[in-house]
Image 1 (cartoon, one colour):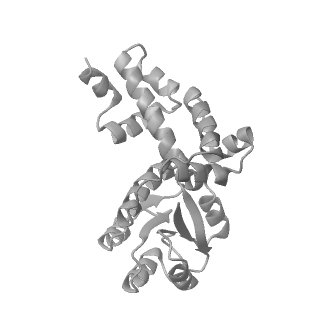
Image 2 (image 1 turned 45 degrees about the horizontal axis):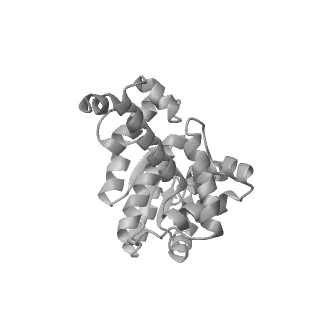
Length: 244
């Protein structure tokens, strides 16, 4: 599990963003938040999160200044600017200070998932740990029931909340099952098994690429192609042609 801290001077905007399902599904817990960037510095030092998600334009101290002050104090976590603004100059300053990413509001669930998967990989490199072995007993049996259901219903949309209702578990408990038993997150697990199925279907050449996307649970064809390229470093069509 990774720890995220959130900073935004707009309470309602912050509430919506930090409660997006992608955070929990990608293994992130809320380590704290602040509406006042002047107060955020001390709170972040105390919380020592893995990543800070901060707005850019805030009264008293903007996101770049917040990052600069924390960097000067020795904080080495990751920074992600979440802003309604897209000025090149601000983004340039951010990345020169070793910022991780810069996204423009409103952030879609797909975009956030993609960002968090990449962010997790970078954080893991800072504190590498061997993946936990599959546990025996009740926990692994519960997870096996869940993963069997997911593999048999890949064409459907799934979330931790929906799985919690179906299997009568708290979504946080399911998230922890994936972390403890498989050493991964729910989103990464789903992406991997969807892509494995996509590759099998593409090799079989029995379905059109759009049909493969739908069979693997991707209603958005272009998003399917983007994820496939991230995993296999080529488009679905190129993958299929290479298998001929």
